[in-house]
Length: 183
Image (cartoon, rainbow, N blue to C red; front, side, top):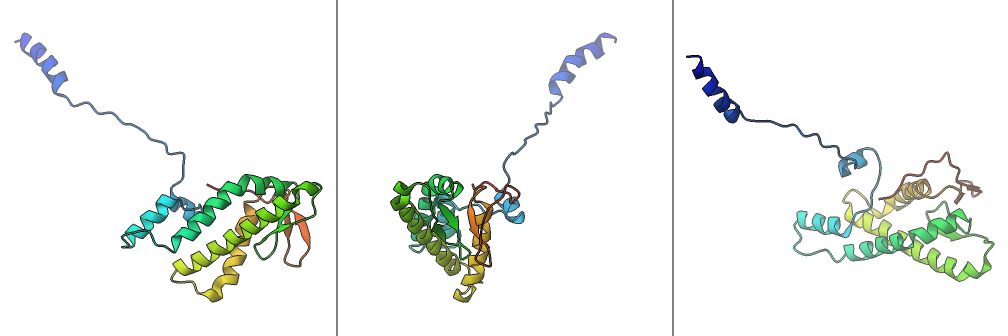
């Protein structure tokens, strides 16, 4: 009888299910978390297309194409605009426009004008698109939306960016005005 418990020991070990617990740490915040925290991340083309499918459209809306193209160009020009903002050659006006400022590098004038024109066109396209896509917004809300957009633009601008205040006076963005990375 003493052999009987020893025979069941290997069978007991083999039949006992083994469990493991794996902990997964996610380093990125979800879109919902970012939205709740008030951080705006640009939509990728895939997300825009997914939104149109979820909304019932069989193909991407023609009205999203200009907004996607505008956002792409903004992302393409971001390095140049950030560098020129830090040098003081470009600044954020109070009406959410990127303006050319006096620059110590006169050979950049053509490039500054082109960047400013492209960026301002892209901003106008995005504001118009946002109002058209949001059923709660009307064209009369454009100035309020522009003010919110301007605050975000200044927030995400590098330290040293010339910024126009409400009174029309210019100041350089300080390091205390935190910059959050755009995604």
